[in-house]
Image (tube, rainbow, N blue to C red; front, side):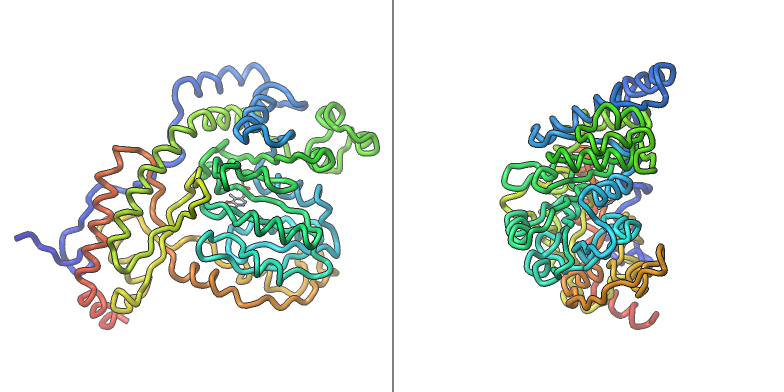
Length: 427
Ligand SMILES: *Cc1c(COP(=O)(O)O)cnc(C)c1O
């Protein structure tokens, strides 16, 4: 008889494979290293739209089924978002509505442009902005709605676009979690007036540091280029004469991507289809396993979407089905069993000082418009209940490990009474 006691209470752990279980970004193949070496002497500062920068931008448009005409690389997703907000006209007195729970950089550049943000609750199924809450958050100063396709699941775009149209809003898609995700067959990033994909190292398609802005709107392209790409690129790529006359100085910022990052991103993009297949196989298997664990709610995937990148795996915990054990105690028990597990890192945006201060801290002369958000009940629930598990992608190599993850969840379920008792004794 083996010792079935929880590892937290002195038993044997289910998993002995050392961490990390999610190895990301994956190491480079030889061809990528050779391309990086060749770039070193070919050109290490690209001023116009050429070489690996132009190549990446063209490949990215193809990746989006050529549904939009322009792609502009930046040195980070955050920089691309800053340029997108500038291009969409965010300035003093303009309000942007965005989701209550997401990565802060989706919205924080708005404050650097002297704009303001109103937060709307998210939908429990998509985990993206709830179209009803979005509509209720709109004021006479709202000009832009930002959607984030959170953790790879596309937002309800039909409903979001209908609200935006009713109120004359421009739509910005932050696709940093959703490379390759599709809504009703169409790639995310092709629905809004502009879209940004971060290419930071954690993302499904990665440059290391980098971001890309895509749009079908010539004026958005021109203004975004002017903000971050002065000299050659502005001179050669900007259509509008009124804007092109600023080409030497641009509008003051230099936010270009380095050619090395573009080389890395191109290789990552080429390898993405295979990794995507692996993520889908692994995470479908994990979801099926967790469906057999009464206290866990596997990640929901709506019928009309393709998860593409499947960025992260964040199922919800139901403590009522585990004798009321806290999430922290559950995480401690699972970690003792050898799992790589935690609580998702991003807090609700409303809890950040940038949102809590009643002045814009970048421009202390600038108050914020009082805005009394509805309670973000769903965002709070996800913040309190979600677990973060590895985004497994090596199929079938990871299958055995995924089975052990599920086995560990089941083991904790069998011992819930002992775990609840342990929690009472140690609190
Ligand atoms: C990563 C991320 C960003 C910021 O991108 P960087 O490339 O890290 O600057 C913005 N929004 C979301 C949703 C992200 O996940």
